[in-house]
Image 1: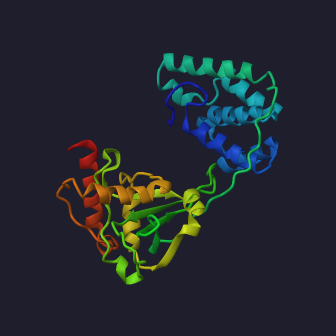
Image 2 (image 1 turned 90 degrees about the vertical axis):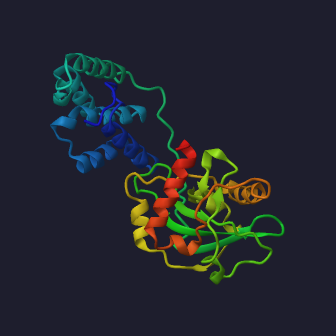
Image 3 (image 1 turned 135 degrees about the vertical axis):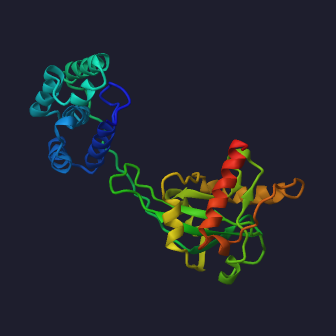
Length: 297
């Protein structure tokens, strides 16, 4: 039923409703206006009655805009156990805990908060790079580095942080010569071993906020084609790549190159950019190698 405890905040419906309430609240809408939008969008059924209205009530209470009708719905859930049918299936002890949580909540929100939560102005950071973009940047005062954008992940319209991300494959390219577009296909995907917490092929998600701040230092050399099936595969359930910090990307490349001067590397496929543009098998291999190094399996 999407719940992990009896508390009013311990269910998926609460998370969805409260986050969306904040999204509209930060955009300047009033609590009663947001309630109309949420009620129309979610059309809560009887099973979701308690979860939905407690979430709306909590959000409106936090914003000092709790409506009498919404308060009465919470009372109905608490006193008449409306919307608790699924909890009844969990057994009497769980139902009692849930009812007690609702009763305490109903009592709490009858006292108005001294201050409303502050409205935040959230600056959006949409993705600025597209799938297949080949980018270069200075690793230091002399040397260029390079990477390829595998995909863009735009933020969800209901996201509170409004920050997109790009899936980026760093390469081991380090040269005093700026790379040309034809050089990218021959570049080797960076395989990091110097840091155990993120060993393996360095293909990670980097947030658009950091990339935007560094945009003046990044040059798009050109674009190559990435098979859409690659991104469909990586976006499927169970495929996981880490988020990493773009501010650390240059250090990652330099540190790994320096590490290899005096340390041996594990046996792995020396994959090039061209090898990951279309071949799903190589993505499976890259994921397997990451898991092996992370979990020593």
